[in-house]
Amino acid sequence: MFDVAVIEDAAAAEVSLDPVRARLLAELSVPGSATMLAAKVGLPRQKVNYHLKTLEAHGLVELVEERRKGNVTERIMRATAASYVISPAALSAVQPDPSRAPDRLSARWLLAVAAQLVRDVGALITGATQAQKRLATFAIDGTVRFASAADRAAFAEELTAAVTTLVSRYHDENTTAGRDHRIVVALHPSVTREDPAG
Image (cartoon, rainbow, N blue to C red; front, side, top):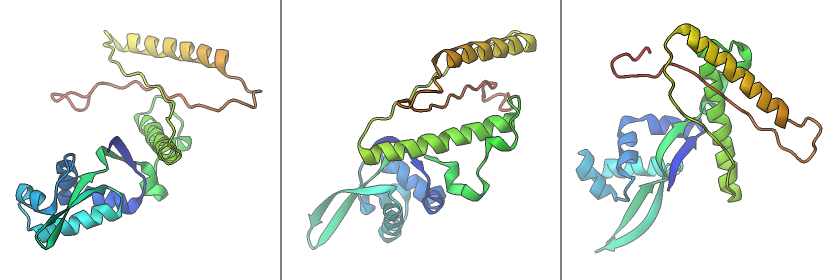
């Protein structure tokens, strides 16, 4: 079971968004059978079994083992991941494209860049998993509290200058052995329960 899996297929995304199936996926962080799940979610075993087969057909759950109980074979299933992220690639016709409006101060552009990050890293995870290789990535996550909008603007300028200096120091346009890497730096108000708009 993966910690996080990226859903890139539109049909799998649709299946995962069904409330009953989403609940089953959550319950299947621990392996279980249709009978066990039926008791937990309050549905008939046959209905749970139908949903499990649909989830299995889209690679969201997998068979762990089969147990013989009298003349019935009980299938023990588990989710293929502890959590899922739906890639914008699942909505290919309407997925965000940061190149449409490259305004680095726009929240919508930030969202488009984040969507591209999810799409790209999801594709890389899929490829690395198939090749049975590790994927080299790096992320920084932190919180900074600004005393004023002027401090926030100054921080953004200094951060831009620092990143630009680092990129110019390490970027080698002439190498044939290297591989391009994307860097995404984002700054947005923290979301709190009291003030979701930030």
